[in-house]
Length: 483
RNA sequence: GGCGGCAUAGCCAAGUGGUAAGGCAGAGGUCUGCAAAACCUUUAUCCCCCAGUUCGAAUCUGGGUGCCGCCUCCA
Image (cartoon, rainbow, N blue to C red; front, side, top):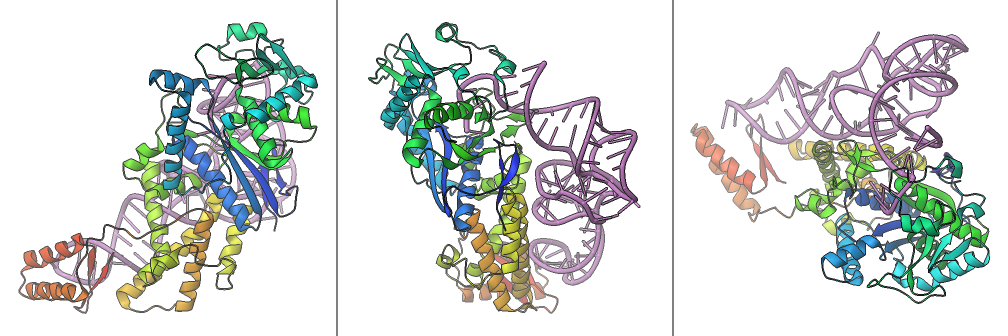
């Protein structure tokens, strides 16, 4: 079986063949740290986290690099507002980023380069571009001469003639005066009074936005990487410009595969800071939404399609997660210590349901079709929950326990690939011993026989409040279980 | 104006030539003192519209309509 993925560059699905067999170099254009991350960021981070996990599960040695943009006008604005510094603002939101991602169970990247730590690489790149005739200085700025790069527009499918200058009506008149062509973009910006600046061959200044990624990729992963990922809104101009910068210097492709995730929308409109219709990750999680439900919400849609955020969608995902979670806790509920629940299981183990594994892989191999792969997890979880109920309610099942354990292990392994982790509810206030529960049940039986249903129901409610569910069976016996 | 994408049940969402996965929600029933839990059954004659290709199309072609993203910072 081969993994096929949709390459924005060629606009078609292609078999995945990394440059070096068995090894994947992957870069994800991360966030600009001037505010808390919103759901749009969460989607991107979760999607690329799972892509990375999946590639690793498929046996690839993955080197995953994600940047932080920590030089930016918006960070500076915020610093001014708060009478703080760019460094302090950036540092604060980088910490917040890690907190949010930890809650969402997004694994840490292998490296998190920052623009402020990449000044040498950036300046080297700008110099080379200048030497090769792709860049020109202008009043302390340095611009990229877009018309020098014959392939400009190949990623986004644009021709310079088709681009509309200032299509949305925002053009910086001052910059325009320095540019030879309106589509040229800044590689280096001259320092403005009171702003952070670095020494350079072009005087005091700071890097433009696009150049940092070109420099970081080159420094960390090499001239050609396998996967370059990011939000679809970065295709143009950001990724287009990265290609122009990098390939003009190296003469080789910057990335073999360009992958882009779809946007999160609210009422059908893109979630963004400028529209003000965003909800931050912590805002959502702090109103007691389970982080794993957010993960499910994201993975239930194909990663390239837009997903609309609604209360209904989230609550649907929360309920769906409960189903998966119960399945994942089958081992725990059948008496296995919770430590056995994660990562303790060898996924290549012959003890797995290989048919399910194969169906999962076939689904996801098709351009990371996680929604389709999720079907396998739901089937396993539902089956396990069903069998668990049979065992709890009747004490027996027709399915062999060996088979159930096999399905459970398979579910845990596949869930791990998608980054789902379940832990039992800590809210089990139940400090009751089995004997105490049995005693309560006897009290209730006595009340029932006396047709004192008010008393009987009170006992039942009290037990339920402590997480004990009673099951009255037709034969008059009352079973119970903790939940 | 240019470039790209999407339209499948109440909602979300797979499915790219062979007769509609899955999730959420809903309905009916069994059981029960009533519940709960559980169990059983059930929920698109049809995939935006029109025309065409084909033995056969949600799936291919052409033409519409609607929605979204990008062309400005953006995941």
